[in-house]
Image 1: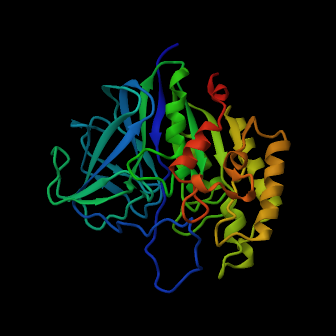
Image 2: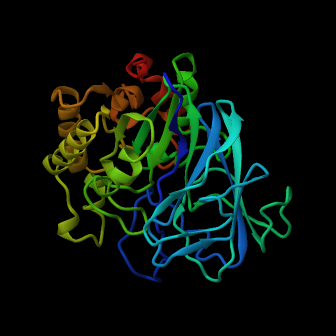
Length: 382
């Protein structure tokens, strides 16, 4: 089989607006931190991303999916090598668009960190961003893309404009898309430890033909509705974040708890409320769209949140209804039971103490390992 391009790393993009003083409903612990960066002005941004599979050539994808104006990239460098776009050293990202760099021959081994530097020459450019990056990134004045060490840099932990890294991989290689909310995103895991369960799963898959795992989680995301500052709904972003990823063969759907929680928060209108039946309808739509493009769908049950202040008996009743459907409907190609992997046998509405962070919702590093270990690796062999 001939080599082909596959997504080796990626992150879902969002436009995180500035907070309005005193406005909006109270958000749960699932809400991401306020954006670290509002605008970028004649600065270099440097980010690190880990390729989950190896290949012989590399290209990057830049996104202006949520920008309100075209964005000019004055220079782009990958590990010291200047990138081009249609053989030009700079490119303008149209509003709402995603573009690829020209490929470069660059041998990459699985689990290799790649450094991408972008220079934004214009003033007050609003970034398309992924908030919960969990890796140190830097912002420095001027064009320092060619410098090995950035001068006068500030540190943050988000991805700006960088949405994908693809590699030219063997014909047997393919990509698994982990699609979901904060538990996919890795909120409350240790920054820099590569601890979110999609990363752990990628390392577990090392014994199979090359299998990339791309994390398309967004903290606070919902299946059915957009949540301000936390990205468009799963239904709205599915084409961009799943179907458009080269080499995608499987999608792991792990999302829905926020749909059941957010509508009951103080200050939320009744129109934001979602029932178990509403959420199941959303799952059906995503499964249908995935199957229409030849992707297999692994459904994940909703984990318990009994230790959280946002827990209610109504949420638990809806969660049980949804999990029953996930397990027994036969609509998914396979099931991974996160509820069974995480719940406390003595208190099944809660996650086991050693697997959950202080907020009672988000698994800690050990909890993410438990999630990754719950997947049957044979699901991804063929």
